[in-house]
Length: 448
Image (cartoon, rainbow, N blue to C red; front, side):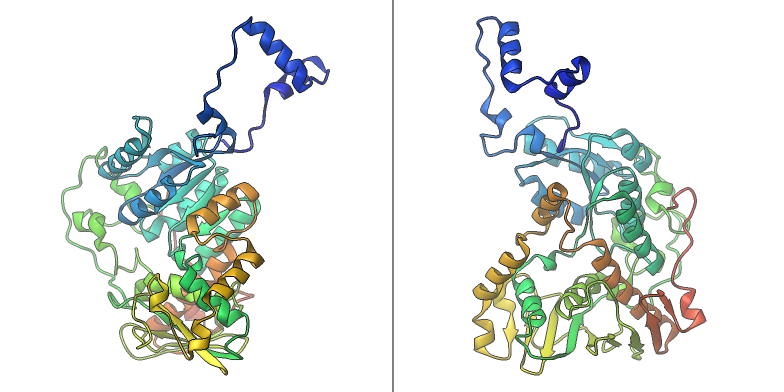
């Protein structure tokens, strides 16, 4: 575990009141060992490419399904990270993660837990957790983990409401925890290139940005329940824990297979699905990371395609299902007085711009970004580096909250079918009905 609180020297000093030098300790060790030499394996000292035990980050997981498995596979490749335990209400998911981890390490050591409360209370050895549950659990699991002294990497969208996002921010601040939301585009070279072109003034005065929203489900979402089915045994799936803080409903196996998406109680709509990524990237490019849009203009279609959100700095954000400049998915675009840049997918080949000169600056821009920030082009690596350094991650709590507030406000605008004004400082609308959507009740005992 990183930052151990005790050492042999400290223990000896505390018991005798005299300071022992390194030479004293070596003499004592030699006397105790007689004439036998100390044979220390190279792996213990970190000489086999792995970190020494004192430098390792001990990691656990909460709710690692399909997306979580992808994230975990990347994290297992980091030489200073050791994954120890998985918590999931679904036994098949627990076992899947255990098998993956045990195969990686060549042992059977990965521990399993079904109860998040017991997991966080008992696993005092963990430095950090990676959370990839369904959306309904993201904020609450993050809050519980940070209160238990863990740093948190949480998949997006990281809140279901504006109030939940605020709780994540305040918890991280109060408990001094490192937090990263899983908006991986904030660390992808092609996305960083677009953000930096916009942020640095190379496009001139920014006036418009575009953020792609997902072309499935819709902004309105379902409020009904799927038909009731017989509930599985609790040791196979703890249905109450799986539901967590959202309202109770009868079990249906389709929910567990992913059909919770598109339901109001579980999801943040097509706007949150991709907007959690693209809006954060846009807000980074227009220097509005820690805030949100202040005006929202309703658009009469199911997706929110074309919804306009305006920022206090004068930039206009347009939510869009598709732009011709997006050859890949989850696109962002910045328009300025001197040019435009658009990114989608995860590679530079899908970057388009207003001139060959702009597109030719990739290396220069990324080198300047690396020199200015010291950040790696890896979202997971940025998190682990920050666990060690204790500095904020690239997708820190306030940036997450600012982007998700824009997501939630856009959703509320669509639900109420009218224009809205929002105050990011007071965190409230100028509309009493809209303010009713700022928070949702959490179902006991799954409360923050």
